[in-house]
Image 1 (tube, one colour):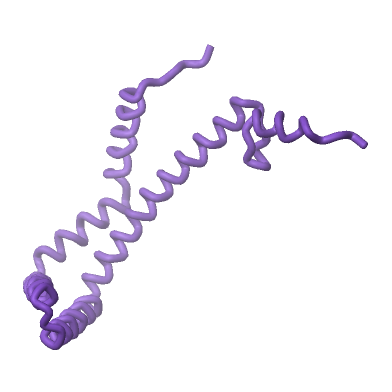
Image 2 (cartoon, one colour):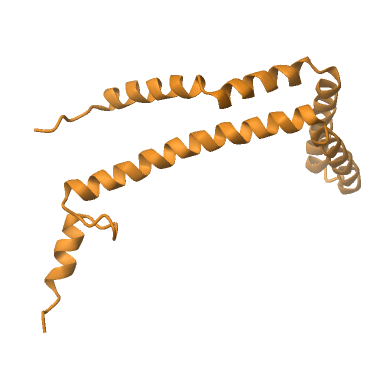
Length: 145
């Protein structure tokens, strides 16, 4: 008989996988890039300015000051564009994309494997992506004429 797993078993395995992910080259690169970002005074100042302008934008929006809001939003866009031109920031953003891609790959792999296991365990059709009951009952109404 096949083993039945508990939620706790699955969570334990997920924690193990999370630890493995945290020890990948992608996450290591992310940590180094983040440290360099935090050490860079110019980047820190630009980020602080953007955050301050974003708070102003929220206030202007709240009080219906559309012209002031447009000006602040333009300043934010300009600062963000300048920030994005800094190679260090580009590397950091790329490292974020790579870590997110890895997490998405793991999530999709789990999802696809669970689906496949359900289909297989119900004697379904993997190629059509149908469970056994779907295959069984979709063939019942067909005649062999």
